[in-house]
Amino acid sequence: MKRRNILLGGAAAMSLGACASSPSKFKRYNGPEVTGIVVNKSSREMFLLHEGKVLESYDVKLGFAPEGHKETEGDGRTPEGVYRINRRNPNSRFHLSLGISYPNAEDIAKAQALGKPPGGDIFIHGQKNPLRRDRGDWTWGCIAVSNKQMEDIYAMVRDGTPIAINP
Figure 1 (cartoon, rainbow, N blue to C red):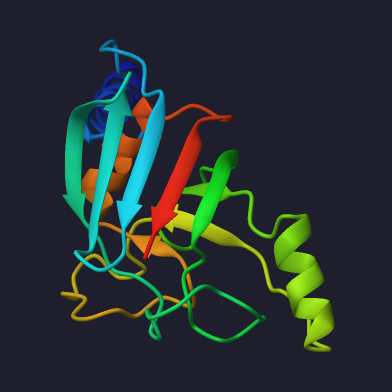
Figure 2: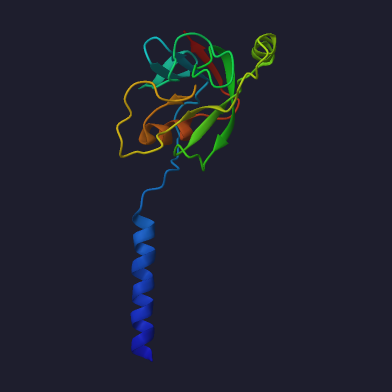
């Protein structure tokens, strides 16, 4: 009986040790506060800023129809304008994600004038399949980075942070 308990205890300890050694997607950040985000669609770059100074820069993928401002649901465009990070999704299908406050009142009015919904659920997010190399713009209007980059961004950016998305 003692021998069985020792074996079971050893197996449990090894299992817990394996869990503890797997890296977490949730990182800690103790650097300067990210006070703004700028995305330049034409150059496919995103910058995390502290008081106007660049802390980090990333190459990004955009909506599959990247030219122009998002007007309606399903148009494949990434919005342009000033928004805020308004929510976090730790269980995203795209690793981790930070919600962008699109649509605003102006976006809604423009879409209504076209007789269509404005769409929504625009995020900064990671990859759906980290083993596949995403080429070209592939999202439905979101801003995508690698999963490793998304882990850093998720740790650095707080809800309420302004994001300017430029043409």
